[in-house]
Amino acid sequence: MQLYYHPYACSLAPAIVAAEAGIALDLVHVDILGAPHRLGDGTDYRDVNTRNYVPLLVRDDGSEVSEAGIILKVLADLNPTSGLAPAVGSPERLLLEQWLTFLGTELHKSYSPWLFHPEVGATAQAYARDLVARRYAIVEAQLDGRTWLLGETFSVADAYLFVMVNWAAAAGTPLDGFPLIRAWFERMKARPKVREAIRNHSASPAAKAA
Image 1: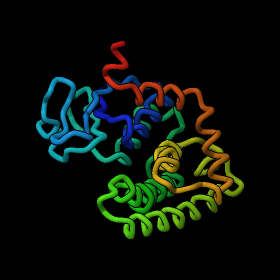
Image 2 (image 1 turned 30 degrees about the vertical axis):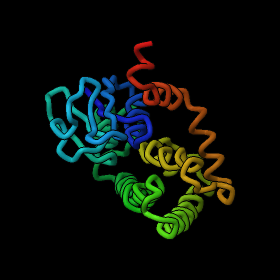
Image 3 (image 1 turned 60 degrees about the vertical axis):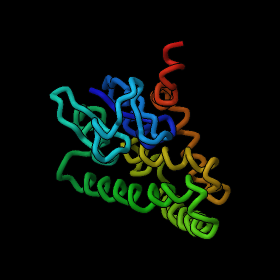
Image 4 (image 1 turned 90 degrees about the vertical axis):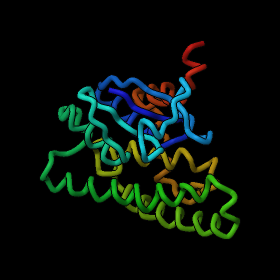
């Protein structure tokens, strides 16, 4: 399978889940900082994905899956024994669905595009940072008494949350007031498969070839 990615993008979450699940992915770099977005061979990314953003998962049968939260569940369900997602139809799965939706719509989209595009203005960015802090307060409460976001089992929700927490320093959304999130973040960075995914995902095509 192929995962279209960029080192700064939320495609890191599927890369983490694939590593944790033991699923091999061919990472295809997309230059999302250029206009138009292009692949390494110069192909306009819109010719591959009309939505023009990453991640995009192309399965072995050629079918495509977009949207980070959906890709995470698809990858986890390919290896149910990994425990990365509860069984479909279970109460635990419903909880996972709620958290993935919260992370995607309430936290992820408070970062992007607002905190990565200074042209939106200082007022909009200040509002976004305040919103992020309020969303982190919800995550902080959820982590009270829990090792991982859903309890004692690492899940795809942790992989998705890692993306935004990893952006915090660069985006100016301090974690000083969230000790449980900071401790969780250290646990995440200590996971061997998370470190492996970060290495693979952060490498540019040139770095990989070197």
